[in-house]
Length: 88
Image (cartoon, rainbow, N blue to C red):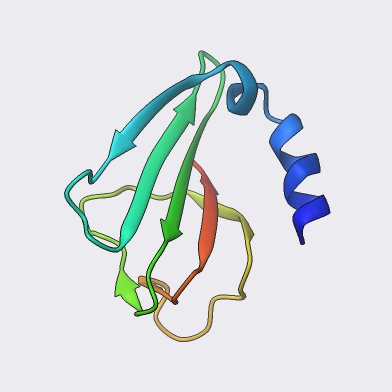
């Protein structure tokens, strides 16, 4: 998993050179941000807690590209310690 993540980090140039925007700074469980440049944008959702939580409905998500779990059941539910990367 981590080798794939390291390889993925180097592929989209916006993860290296793009702008970082923190979203939902007051959320107690989720760390959510975007990385974007003039050609692409990505949404990163990380649950740094030991409880399941839902993605805020105000976030627009695109296609799920990477995650450390397969989504089962409710796609809004983020499991404990789960990370997801969406192309938006």
